Length: 292
Ligand SMILES: [Zn+2]
Ligand SMILES: [Zn+2]
Ligand SMILES: [Zn+2]
Ligand SMILES: [Zn+2]
Ligand SMILES: [Zn+2]
Image 1 (cartoon, helix red, strand yellow):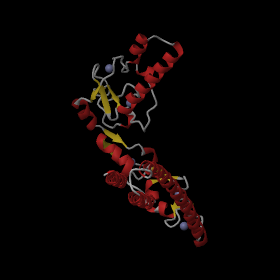
Image 2 (cartoon, helix red, strand yellow):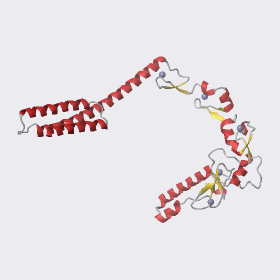
Image 3 (cartoon, protein in one colour):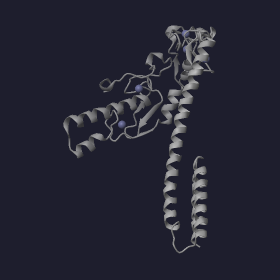
Image 4 (cartoon, helix red, strand yellow):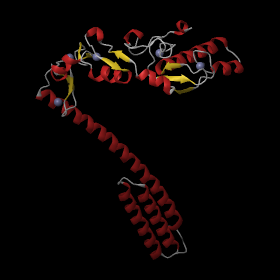
């Protein structure tokens, strides 16, 4: 059955031959039916109890979903069929697939396996327990191949570390703290280039600031226009009342003009919500005084 759904393992697989103490009794238990190698970070189907590498089953489910979507797209099927097809299946056809933690017995068997380092062909002679393997291969193995991010050369970790390659590689990209330019170590970044770039950045910032401040000015201008209109209405109502005497009219007009001036002054500040509320409250208070 396994050969029907063999998929490429995304990381370095632990092939059976790398295990130095594999008991024939356990061989079936510790192998993944999807990739056919030793189980890596396994999970288990809660219905059939078969275990799979976590990455293998994820890939399996993803591919299954893709096939279902393609089938539905091509066949324009009805809702019932879509629902039944949408249920995910484990490689042994359990549906819907439900995952659970790997059984403790299997974890225990795996933890006792001793495995050759994946870099054996480059010269590493280490044999490690299952749980130590990843740390050794990723962090400690001196035969790990590292690709320099600058010159893109592959080299052993031992040489990479010993020569402090990152500190010396001419193709590593550096960033100038003063002008934020990015350049390769081999290319010179002169004082003149640096100054030019700094001036360019300053100009760019100034333009942005100018644009921002002109927008704020426009908003404030609109606010003033709206307030002006409101004051005109107030003037129309109270400025031409025939029953009041001239002295009262003058007093009211003066007050309105003072408020208008104050409002103009306030409006050129950036108004927060609280300032707007205080201003409106103040205007209502003045209108109230005028009404008495
Ligand atoms: Zn697998
Ligand atoms: Zn199953
Ligand atoms: Zn190694
Ligand atoms: Zn390099
Ligand atoms: Zn610079």
